[in-house]
Amino acid sequence: MKKISKYSILIISIFLLSCDCDCMDDLVYSPEKLPSEFQSMASPGSSDLIAPAANSSCIIGSSVDAFTSNVTFQWSDSNNTDSYDLTYTNLLTNDVKTKTGIKTNSTTILLFKGVPYSWSVKSIKSNSKTANSGTNKFYLAGSSIVTNVPLGAILSTPTTSSGKTTLSWTGNDPDAGDVLTYTLYVDKVDGKQTPVMSAISSSSVQITLDTGSTYFWRVKTTDQTNNSSFSSISTFNL
Image (cartoon, rainbow, N blue to C red; front, side, top):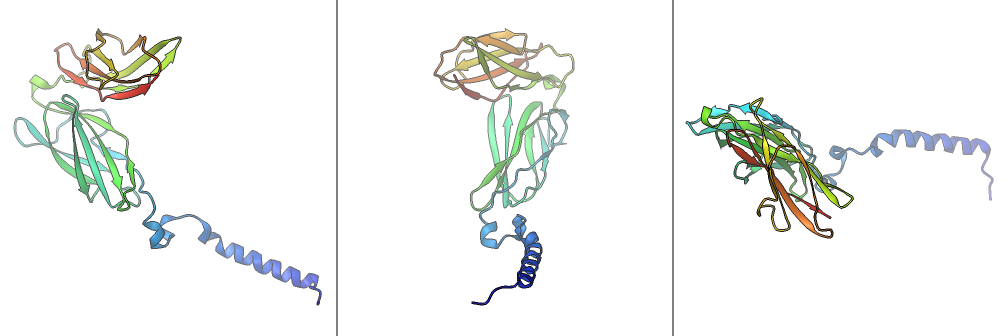
């Protein structure tokens, strides 16, 4: 058997290093560089919501009549996405609707004036993989009789210490200076049973609940002219 000289080993090493350097770019992950059969398996990215912006207090839209306006929703394009679903909620009634199969990053929806709304976008890939955006809330301007409706409260994650559970939230109203009070619903059914507390002036309370149980909760926000709105319903386990 012939011996491999040190010179031959050096030549082979230089050749291997050269190949490694030339191939580094191909080893960097990039979905668009993947073969089509692998691209179809990739998950979509999530969109950033652009308009209406978060906590917008007076969106006007394009007035249709005394009661409704067309509102244009816009969000950023997300990677690897075939279509979008836009979900919007009337925060006065908790009525949830979804517009599906949107192929662009904007759409227009007819909404009632004088109502607070929340909205979000789901990015969808044909392989059934999805990604969700965050959620924005806004108030659609209406006539003077309904312009004082508060936005739905934003619920915080409950905490428990020494047998007491702290429930807290953030209230918001389109009209600066409005005095807000809250009604707290907490139950083991659906968050819509008899409230446990009402006329709460703070945005945090402590209550005693059963351990080992799942609870549903929501908050009703009311201003001094008796206009009100509900938060979304959230769950937590003790």
